[in-house]
Amino acid sequence: YQPFDVLPEITTAIKDKVLIFSDNSPISVPVSVRAGKDNVAGTLTLALPAGWAANPPSTEFRLDNQGETKTFMIQVTPPKHQSEGYIEPRVIVEGKSYEKELIAIDYDHIPYQNVLVTSKAKVVKLNIAKKGTRIAYVDGAGDAIPESLRQIGYEVVVLTTDQINAEYLNDFDALVFGIRAYNVLSDLQFKQEQINTYVANGGTVLLQYNTSRRLVTQTFSPYPITLSRERVTDEFAAVRVLKPKHQVLNSPNKITQADFDGWVQERGLYFPSEWDDKYAAILSMNDTGADPSDGSLLVASHGKGHYIYTGISFFRELPAGVPGAYRLFANLLSIGK
Image (cartoon, rainbow, N blue to C red; front, top):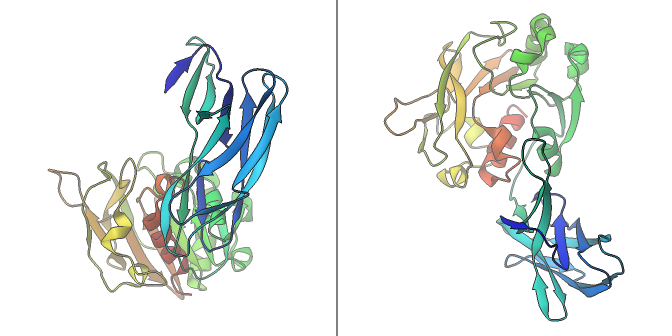
């Protein structure tokens, strides 16, 4: 970033930093332009990856007062094929190009300062299939998975623990728990029978990672799972397939090694170290020099439904717009459909 004491004539910003396109329909993207001085006029355009289109291709504007901001809606249309890249607002004023976003850093423990960063948003066109439409989500310690699922066309209803009962859950294609839900929601210790009944009746439960310390109950799944501190911190670590014919790797999206490219920060964390034989361990991975960890993704049938436990860091990958993570998550939600 670039610290700045004197504001530039123009700065731009895109509110949403990751935009997911699950079909060929355009999305209206709000792009704001801010004046750093009085009486600024210019032309706004979007720099796009190859194959993407913007409508209108350019917009004329005028800002009369310093600090004035205007927001323009630009329709962005993806290509038909899977693609990812960045869109960047560019403003031309009197022949000079402006491509920066102004961010104010204001905390008690450091001096106030303005910084300039490149104004951009990641765009991802996904070739993705999914089965089911209605997802129940129980927030844990906090993540952006619901917003990410909505971007690919799911209806996501966020539930409280009071709403967890087998009869109500039957209206949903899957029940997903946010990260560390069994660490922070004490009422879940009283809900496991209802959750297991929902699965036995044909539902799908997907539980994201929890830590072994301060679990509100040890019986958070139909069959025993022992959590550990095993993790894979290298986002480039090799991912080995243990069950290549398993449904979650083949339907409705065929998962390949390419789907594990472009991951951010890590592969996953707090993998189980032991589990009941009724679980299928799908993937194996490890950091350099560490023993293989096979507990990143466990899937079990229970009655007519399925129970899934995963320490894979979907809570990082989906908000970052990682295509393969979306495709794998959609497969998990689609199991049994």
